[in-house]
Structure formats: C-alpha cells, structure tokens
Length: 346
Image (tube, rainbow, N blue to C red; front, side, top):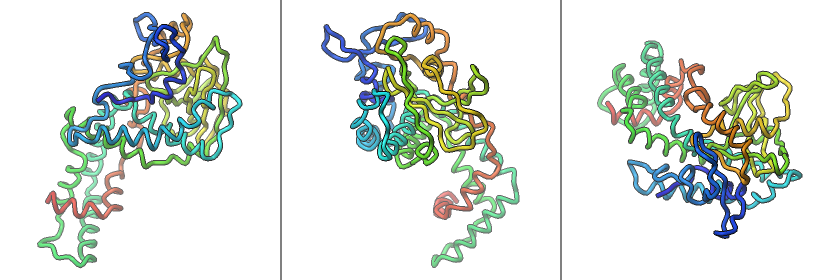
C-alpha cells in the first residue's frame, strides 16, 4: 500500500493544470537532476511511499492509520484549503484548531521524521543508562511499587525486588534495534500523535505571508520547517516546537505561507521571512525533492544549493541537548500500569 507522507490535497494546491493530460501536475526539483514537469500529486514516489505506515506486527494498521489521517486530520483542513491561497484569509478559531493538528501530523508523518527514528532509539538507551546509574531512583521505584501493591486488594506471591525494577526498565527501553522494531515504533508514534493537541502552536501568533506569482513559495517532501533566526541572514534550523524563539513555516500555496510563532518564550524581535528564506528552509528539510507550479531556474539553483542540509536526528531536531536524568524514573513513579507490566516481566 502506498502511503502519502504529504497529503494529496496540499500537493494539488501547488500544482498547475497540465493541458495534454487534463490533470494537475507539479514541477519536481531534485538534487543532480533536471526539473521534471509531470509529477503527480497522487502518486509521485517522493510522497506516495510503499509501506510507509506498514506495521510489522499488524497488517491492518496501515489502512487504519491512512483512514484516520484522512478523516481526522486532512478533511477538516481540506474544507478550507482553497481559501488559504488568498493572502487576505484570516483563520477562525476552528481553522487554527484544525491546522494545529494538521501541522503536528504533517511533521510526524514525513519521510524525514521516519529517518530520524534511529536517533530517538539511541535516546531511549541514554535514558536507560541514566536510570540504571542512579541507585536511589531504583530503590525509590521499588519501594513505591511495593507500596502500591499493598494498597490494592490483590495477593501476589512476592514483593518487587531491586532486580525486578531493573528488568522492567530494560524491558521498556532496551528492545532490539532492528528495522522491524524501528518501523513498528515509528507507526505507533504517528498513531499516538493523532490524539495530541499542541496548545503552544494553537495559542501562538499566526501570519499568512504573501509573495508574487513569479517568485512562488515551494513545497518540499518535508513541508513543516522550523528555525530560530540567530542573525539577520542566519538561521538555526530544526528547533523544537516548544523551544524559545521558535518559528514555524508551512507553505499553503504558491502565493501564501503560514508563519507561526508558538506561544513560547521570546527573546528576539521577529523578522518577517522572505519567500526566498522560506524556500531555502523547504529545500534544507527536504529528503528528496521540492515541488512548484512553475519551471524556474532560480528555484532549481536554490534546491541544488540547499537540499537536505537540515537532517532530522543529525543536525536538526536532535535530542542530545535535553536533560534525561529523570525521564524513566518519572515514568515509573507516575504510571501505575507499569506494576502489571512488571509482573509479566518478573
């Protein structure tokens, strides 16, 4: 099954009418290749990827996930997608709510996000190491688990030991790093994002940037880009959605682009991005290509010079800087369901 990493309706927003086929087509720009003029919003291999949402543990997951993404995330935005091509469009509260979920899933369903999964996996092992090196945390979890057992009207043959807690911690974090395990983890995480709502994005400041038809916004195969502007013409790409001074850009049409300032700490004056700055970010985040409604040597030059420079898990959206000293400890202390998990592991 070919899963769409970028919704077909959004791609059509950037398409032109191809006369000989009487259908929407895109100009596709790739590294080292001449622009291709007949890319299909429906089946282009850069955004319609076989098995992208396939779950090695459940054959039904892919179709279910595709259906939910279409029904819960895409359709509410598709209802007003054409209006976003108008620079004078002002989103209502319901529009922003729908777009908030759309942006979150658009980021997490991309091929770029899938390729960053091994980085997240490495962080799980770091979290485990931090917990196992802290004897006080291990013993505190052990004591709490046994206290919980005593408070329940249940009878167990033995109390939790220190080794039981260590075994549970390893069970949570130390599953084998195989392609099958990585794919299952990715698909499960995308499904989990369906129920998440980012209040900071929703409550942030929303702007619809405009450009001229001969200098259009382009759309990459990883359309949601973030940055911190650290100087007039210098950007730190791949900043987390909740980080200070983060800005989010998502092209909505060749003439318009969302520029969102989530409700986070701000220490710098915000500068309105230019179409070229947005397009450079689109190219930088792209895994394979960018799309446009026109043939343009300027766009081709931009893509050739900047494509794939911001790689998730490598130099964008990395997690190494975060403090994970207490993450597993807090999980085990706060969630009683691990008691039942531990009994199955012990």
